[in-house]
Length: 197
Image (tube, rainbow, N blue to C red; front, side, top):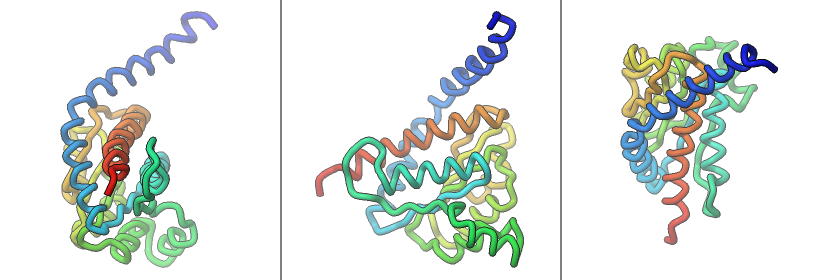
């Protein structure tokens, strides 16, 4: 491969590195959020996560890190990804609308003391906005992983107690940074859950 074919890839890599470096300023927000999630889990709360497409994969990734483990042997933690049951999601989508897919699940399951985590790169996905709104109404701690900070996290941010907005408008870069952020969150929670007692 000559340099002409490599340059677009190098451009994407450079763009990724720039976004990752800019995520450093979100570390204090992740730390604060992680402390609150640990407190909720300690009190018997459950974490519910959701999103569409690649963001659904990120929600499942976060739930998997908590139920399984991140890097330490420790007890499993209660976390559910709401996009993983095709029967429920297609039932709601068919009987109501796709916009209701997460809101109905959150309304059915979330309670005060729980955590509702939404992933949307744009902050505008109607079903994610509705799911966060339902989480707020249920009294859960609401969290938004998003991008496009110039848009202030989009309409979803109105219903989020914590907004982790990756400073990029490119979906691929935002999703890459979401994985990094959910790993930082998982690291803190994992360490807490592995403590004796």
